[in-house]
Every structure is written in C-alpha cells, then in structure tokens.
Length: 447
Image (tube, rainbow, N blue to C red; front, side, top):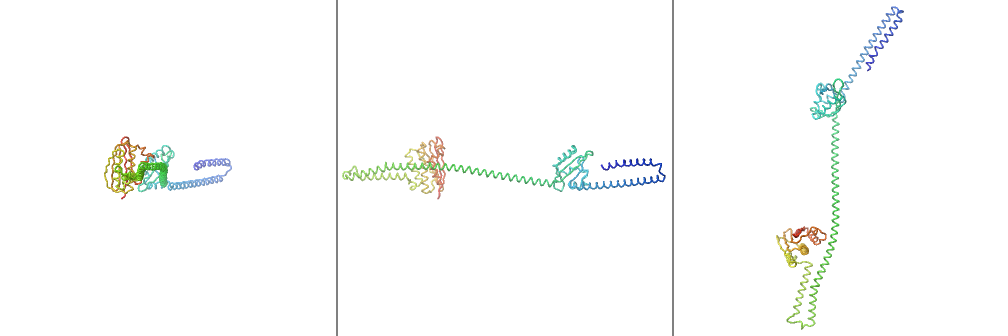
C-alpha cells in the first residue's frame, strides 16, 4: 500500500512544482537577464538530476527491501517446523518446504509434481481425498488426520489443514506431525483401559465377596434356625425319653407285680401252710417241695424276662445274627406277622456295643411295623462283610409318609437315626402309600 501511495503522490508534487515555476517565470521573465535565465536553467537541470539520482536510490532501496523480505519469507517458509505444501486439484505437489519434504522422506526436487496421496496409507487415503475435495469446494479451512506411509519408516500421524486459493485453483496445505501426541493418547487410552479393567475386576471381587458374605450370613441364619429346631427337638426327645422311661418303669413294675410278686406270695402261702401243718401238707397228690421248686423256677423266668427287657443278652451271648433271628422269631410269634429272613453274606466281626446298637435299631423298626404299618409280611435282607454291616427291612403295610419321616415328633425314627449316626453309618426311610415301607441302614465295622 505504501508503494502505491508514493507513486500516486510523486506526480502531484512535481505538478505543483512546475506550476509554481511557471508562475514565477511568468511574473519575473521580463526582468530577468539572459545570464540569470541561463543560471536558473542550470539550477533547474541540476535539481532535476538530483531528483533523478534520489529516485534511483529510492528504487534501489525498495528492491533491497523486497529482496530482504523475500529472503526472510523464504527462510520462514523453508525452515518452519510444520510442513507446507501447495497442491492442485489433483493433489499434485506444486511447492513444499523442507519440513514437508522431511515428513514425506524425500528431497524436494523428487517430491515436486508427485501426488501427495501416494504418501498416505491405504486406510486413510479415502479420508484424504474427501478432505481435499471439501477444501476446494467450500473455500473454507478444512482439517483432518491421516497416516503417512513412508518406506523404511514407522507410521507417522499428521494433522492436515487446507484452504483453497480464490483465483489460481491451488490449495495451501499445512501438515503437523502428531505422532507423539497419538502415542501419548494411545498410552493414555491403554492406561484408562487397564484402569477400567482393574476397576471392573475389583468391583467383581467386591461383588463376589459380598455374595460370599451374604451366603455365609444365610448359612449362619439357617444354622441358627437348625440349631433352634434341634434344641426344640431335643427338648421334645428328652420329654419323650422321660415318658418312655416312666412307661418302662411302669411296665417293669407291672411285670414284677403281676408275675414275680404273685409268685412270691404263693410261695409264702405254701411255706406258711407247711409250717403250721407239716404233717397234713405232705401227700401223694400234693408235694410242697415240688410246688416250691416250680414256683422258684417261675420266679427265675420272670426275673430273666425283666433282665432281657432291660438289657438284651442275646447279642453278647450268641452273636448278632442268631440274636436277630431269635428277635424276628419272637416277633412273628407275638404279632402273627410273617418274617422272611435272607442272609446274603455273613462274613464280619462286630463288637458288643455296636451289636447292641444294631439290635436296638432293628427292635425299634419292628416296633414301628407292629404299631403303625398294618403289615402282614416282612422281608429282611442281611449282609455283613469285614468292613460293613447292612440290613434292609421291607413290609407290605400302608407305607409311612414323608411328613411322618421328617416329623420332629417321630421319636422312634429320631432314635434310630441317632444310634446309626453315633456309629458313623447311614439310614434311609422310604414309604410308598399302600405298598409298604423300606428301612435300610449301613454301618462301618472297625477291625
């Protein structure tokens, strides 16, 4: 703008000077001598030459300033940290700076008139073409990020900014290397991903811990309920045992009263009669000694019956299998229920305490069959090995229900379970309505 203003101002000043000179010469002309006129012409010529010299110096100074400015612009352009390119509509490189040549990995002379898109990776090349088309169509600044693919070098990520020229159909493009930024973003992304995974894993651990704690709380509550139920059941069982004990005492007292006491009373009467009239008591039809012997024998049988009722002596005396056979034989005589005993194996040795416990379990099972099953037939399978003893009792009665099996007031079943559990064995009860009940238990044998 300064050049135009000077070129415009100089003719105006010269015109004013000429006009002023004409006016002066017109007014002073008639009074000037020839020598003065020549002198004035000479001065004007000298002044004109001075002005010409000044104009030449001014033009030279302008040229130097322009060359200096062009040199500074060239230095700024060439050595700028960003790559600068001038592209045509086909993407050919018309001009570029040193940084741009370094980005593409070749010398400027080789890169001139080549297509910029050749140096972009195949994955991002369509993106660059769309970006360049928008830049020429919109005449606005467009931006995008692409990957440069240069042979022998790692992939370089660049940020492109482009704006089209208004007249010559060229596009000014700047390229900034953002590889370090991309690497930092990738590191940050991986760190965030790893952190998210750690947070997720930790959250899952906490959830699992919460679930385990909740499960433990549920187990504890269930255990507390079972404990309360067990305490309640044990209280009922204790009351039942007390009742059974009283019933047994009453039964024993009845046996003693009905059998043993009556026999002793009869013996006393016989002895008193014999003492008072010994000569009249002895006869062929009635011998007091024989009568007393019979009464003593009956007393001994009654005592034996009471002892057997309190503590069976059969397992300890004759062994478990003969005692069980005798038990079923007596059961069949008293109840009329047919008992079919089948011994599959008889190869075991068991201690007296375990034998008594097994005997009591079988006795309780037969008691349940007699009192509740309404059965007419019982099948018994016995199997004994050196390591275990098992027995299965099956009747053809009405069949016990699951409610009755699990009822906390079924003290007979509870007692059987407790005895088998004390021997570290297992026992099962299975009832089918109208078809009978099956009781199976198995206990280990310790040699």
